[in-house]
Image (cartoon, rainbow, N blue to C red; front, side, top):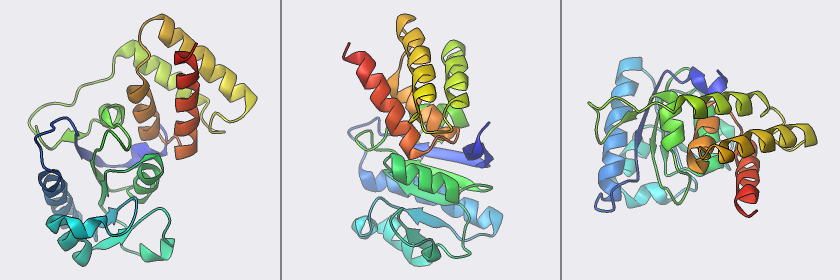
Length: 214
């Protein structure tokens, strides 16, 4: 499995309940990451799409004051030597990729926003704990879909930007569509979990969307 599989433990708060307050979602993730920091004796990292969001939610504000806070646009010097458990708050593709790289060899918790980047495929691929249902075993990806994701993973190195990689991806996606198994969010999330760059995820999403327009 690709580089993101070096994340030791993963957890998420799914964006699946319109009644759930964003503060509650953040609280769940902060509590889990704090425990991971304590267990590993490490400094945590809060990863955001943009600075300032953390000031709107008390638990994120307190976590940012005690740990490190950064964004994909910030200098890597901001993270310093404090690499450890990571909390990514409502990440898009780029922020997820950045957070997953910081979390290598440690733990990663994510608060999902389906309007940012849907994470069900990511969570299933990594066996992430659902922090709203911590006693429930993570669902696995359907075996036929998982096999197709394996094949897509093989061709992802150039970000599905070269002609050969694009052609292979189109063939695999068409086979999935013909079988009624093409789930856009599941495929993109699982590839992200397997180490696909944000560029690869975006390019693959465009290929899926092009199929849907036919």
